[in-house]
Length: 503
Image 1: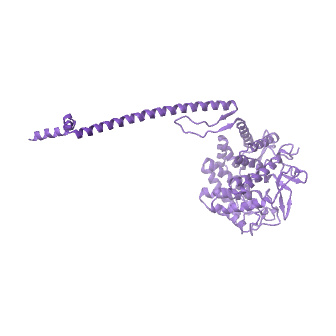
Image 2: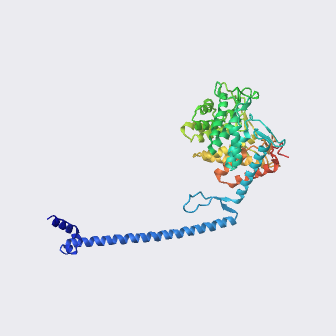
């Protein structure tokens, strides 16, 4: 019986495969036919889709090959016209990079600028290594910034950006092994901040090496006692080893507006990178104190009393020496702070200052050059420093970050002032600018102080105007000025200033 039940069970499992099972049951036969036809259509449909997919891939591959051929033809055509692609798209299976076209003329210009940097750096390296500055004619070094190797530190970011790795590594080695802040010297708080603190932070941001941040913190700590005044407005000079801070005698004990209002970007950046708020607190307190008595026109005199925090109204208002970068930093700190409510007052102060700037604008005759006057009391002085040529770039930057009707006004004034600043250079025999210009009725611009010490303000504004407007004219003007510096100031041992740009 057991064997019989086992045989019957085995038969039951296999009965669905026997034709007689379905012949005796027509409904089940019909169901089987429907399942068979459905399965057949499913297999056929999948095969059809696979063939169509293969055909589509083949078509796309053909189109890709055609596009690659066209790209190759385009590259060859550009090369014959003096253009090339610096970073072409990588082949399939590798990471893609941004493709852009570069004019061969600008590539050549860029290489010449880099060669000029190498010449200046090599001369400094050979004759003045470790000093603040090179004196090219005597081929010796001099310390005008506290003996902190200002040229080395101030050049770190340029060396890195230009890809001068060997020079950068040597400079980094000097910062690591030789830079010494424990010196019995009096240093400018302003100059040390923008050159040393700023230079070290830039190198840290670019290269990521902690030694730069460590050194930036060390020198900033040396400078901090300068802010220990009744008002928080800093003294502008300090002894690095003793921490004794004071103001120069020639200011009558006053602090200088530009010197006191141009540490914010660097010290805020230092707090952001170290996580220590003390640096930011010191410099932001300066702005808060100035904000308390900020004039309606936003124009502050160049001397500030460090005891009361009030401006000395007897001093002049200027966008040139001793006033300039205060206004520049109001805008840049607002941008640095991501334009948030926490830094909104910086932009508001800057906007008010720009309305005051409009009241200082005049035009020359007969050529209608737009220029920025200085103000003494209620009188306008028809004089403009080359230093004030930072203003066009600042205005263009302000316009590019403004979505109101003021944007067009700022940019238009920036373009007019840039034309004036370019002609500070282009109007002289040497094609280099004097230190300042006097505007006399019927004479347009006349060189005032005649020396040139290779200031960068006009070049910086040209860079901003080119970047923001895309107008190649500004880049061409920059090249004109660079060529003039090469012709007039380059010697075998570096670059020298000129006593008189008129001859």
